Image (cartoon, rainbow, N blue to C red; front, side):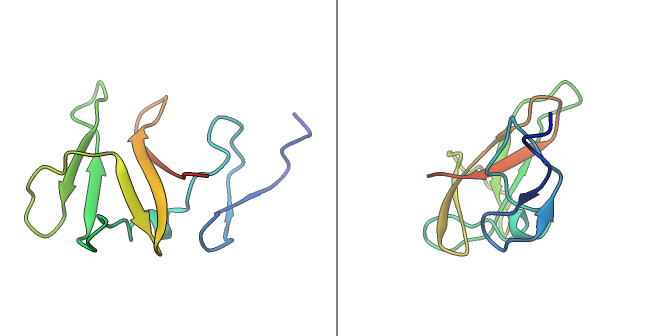
Length: 92
């Protein structure tokens, strides 16, 4: 579709692969900086090969019970991507 020729990370403005499904997704570099509201680093992953969503505190490995996260102080939402992997999008 010609309407989506370019797309940029809403946090740092780096070019990202255009996605109509995920118009506000953050780049890999910004996704790696995801934190909880209190500033603890987070990591997100699939439960297994068939998908699922796991969120953990990166410093302890303990379960993080939310999808909400912050990148550069901007509220975001992490979830399982449609075809696998994890996608983090800025919440408008």
